[in-house]
Image 1 (cartoon, rainbow, N blue to C red):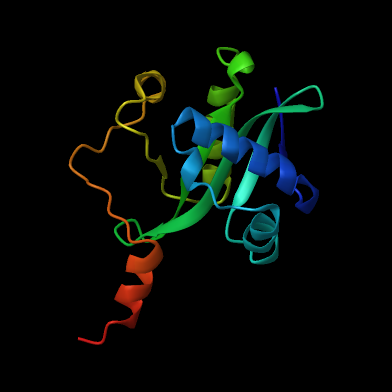
Image 2: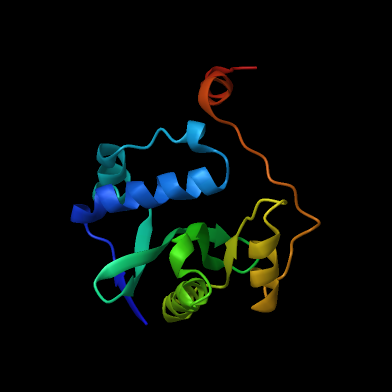
Length: 158
């Protein structure tokens, strides 16, 4: 199984994978990313990285990730934002291969952990992650501020 890091020339391919993932997750209406935004934030600002799983020359899976930081561990970690394998290539080890490649990157970079989130209804993915030895973080609840609420909170002075 081969992998490659994305380059600036892959922005259309990255966006295609993002749209396919959003469709799978029933969230297509939330995708506002564009090729220009991906180029700016991933490649120019270096805020994320992308690895493709390859079958021959064809990208059949994607992992989009970035570094976070654990104050308790005193070191960086890797946060996996998106993991997606094209439906016709599932069950062939590409998802597992991408996760193994990410764990190797985490170890190479001295990171303390690899973590990600999964939708509660996505039982196939949950079962897959558990089969690899991942631990479900039942005692944590995610929170998010976006859009108008993000701007409003930033502007508050109370």
